Amino acid sequence: MTDDLTMTADDTTTTAAPVVAVVGRPNVGKSTLVNRLIGRRQAVVEDTPGVTRDRIAYDAIWNGRRFTVVDTGGWEPDAEGRAAAIAAQAEVAISTADVIILVIDAQVGATDADEAAVRILHRTRKPVILVANKVDDTRAESDAAVLWSLGLGEPYPVSALHGRGSGDLLDIIQDRLPELPSADGDIESGPRRVALVGRPNVGKSSLLNRLAGEDRVVVDSVAGTTVDPVDSLIELDDEDWRFVDTAGLRKRVKQASGTEFYASLRTQAAVEAAEVAVVLLDAAEPISEQDQRVLSQVVEAGRALVIAFNKWDLVDDDRRHYLTREIERELRRITWAPRVNVSALTGRAVAKLAPALRTALAGWEQRIPTGELNQWISGLIQARPHPIRGGKAPKVLFMTQAGIRPPKFVLFTSGQLDPQYIRFIERRLREDFGFTGSPISITVKAREKRGKPGRH
Image (cartoon, rainbow, N blue to C red):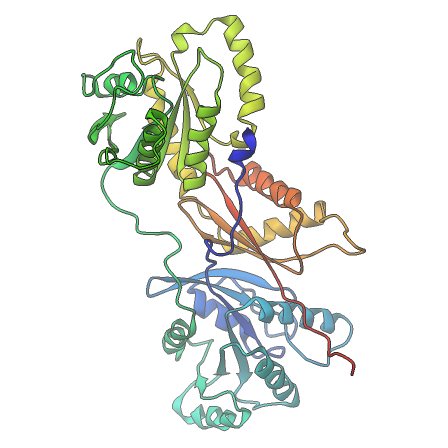
């Protein structure tokens, strides 16, 4: 029964922030350019080749558009030893990027290593922006023009050190990024929207009246009394909250199966219209299959979640013992949801609902910076690598948070990950970063293997 609460990742519904990889041979100014693109001095810069050795990802935004910039070590196609390992990291960045920036030192001109890099980039069939760096004034622009001969199109002259041309370059990057919808959605102003849902006769109307301080809706011991509730604007803890409307669902459905069918429709409508759902459970009765279905609707809709156990005034010591067991067994997949024990009849602990709602919404809108996220995933994998399957283990190459409301993550890997390992990553994400009150979506994008030429 609890399997319904398992989150699934789907490549078709989760969209990663576009990735821009900055590559080039050593000491051409890649990290300086990265600092210009992200608008802050974060990448380590030193006038010594080879300071950057790994792929390092940074969040960037330009004209309201989010993207990820990946700084790489010096890329030399024929490198050996440690330089070869650094070059391999750059090649991984290229394979996972949407747009590639090749940086060339305009004062030096195109070297044999640059020309070899161009040949490799031609085969990627990805958008490549040729940047001629260290063009500090108009007199040096002729040095950039020579790079037309590389066959990558127009070379864009910039001075990463002084910022010359960086704004134009950001515009060009934005034009080359794939067209993607906003990952975060439109965040509306006004009172936060709350769905108060649960199976019939669990006390939803009684709790709404208690929260409002007046009789807003009809309360009856007959299940299903509420048919067409209206939006209720309620002040909780000095803040206005809108408890959402579930009206407009009285239309006939040919294959309806009684009141439970319409209750499910009302629940779905309320959840879809809300940002956070309060799922009300009857603390005096066992957690039912219908309770599980309501919880699943909230999780699958990607809404923030608070669980409220109503009728706590009817819970004695024996019931409390069994309820603890039920929670461990039936709600083990959603231990991340805040739980509040309330009584709509007596008003017990209803003041705790507003803080729980704020906590859940904060988790729903939480974002981890890409650099911090990749440092975290690297340490996690070093401490507990993926199990070896078929003689080797898939590697996690890169991780990014694709969006919020709810938090969505994308793992770029060298192969598919075991489902239990993905669940391990999610569990550790919650342990280390919180995300209290929100479902999490994790998508795995495995790098396609290069096909070997067939023998004839």
